[in-house]
Length: 149
Image 1 (cartoon, helix red, strand yellow):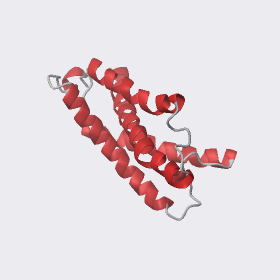
Image 2: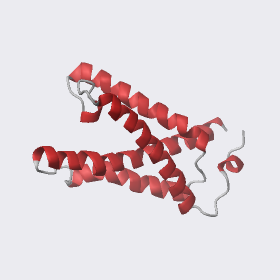
Image 3: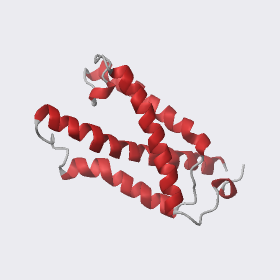
Image 4: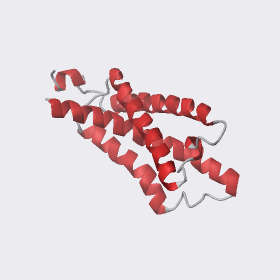
């Protein structure tokens, strides 16, 4: 029972994060790279495309195959995961001296706005996962019936 609940929440978090990564790469990082360097910054190489897009493909396959539906109350777990990543990036900066993404860099004056925007994008990714899940599994049972408490 408990393990099924854990898998249910992990599925929702990872699906939302796969959507988040896909959106950030295509709508933020790639345009920023073209604006700042005039190139794609190797973001269109097979390795980078695979790392940022195949996860979404695999999560969509998982969504079709598993018995989990999204529960709106589980949004909080996706937000926790996002906040944990931000805190991890701070520690990584203290260790290595660099941020992987400009919008997480606290030295930039607009970072607080980026953090609020990131929360909004995480919320949108969760909603997109919820809608995609319902679209891909229109005949599915509610998750509460599949995992009893």
